[in-house]
Image (tube, rainbow, N blue to C red; front, side, top):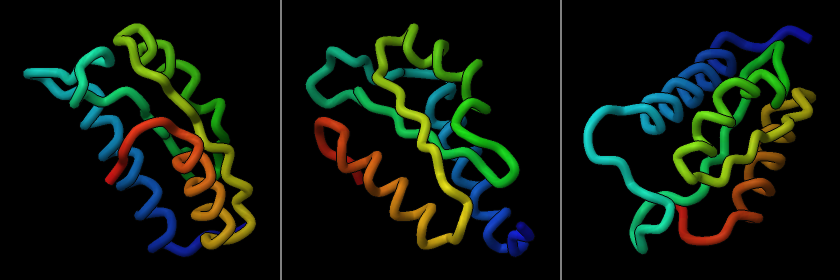
Length: 96
């Protein structure tokens, strides 16, 4: 399947944002904090699947976070968005 350059760029940007947010230096929100981050939903890029996060997930879990790797079908952007929205909807708490 050939993915558009815009689609690939969006997936890479999302992954980069998530990794930056998760591993940034400075104060970190703790899982037991009432306002802290508790859930992380990570999304793979093209030519990969959820297992591509297998080395990242334990690092986040060691920080007390609940981590879900979305298994996108890669059949269309709409299907990938729907799968990601379903994974987010299953999480406890608020998201933005």
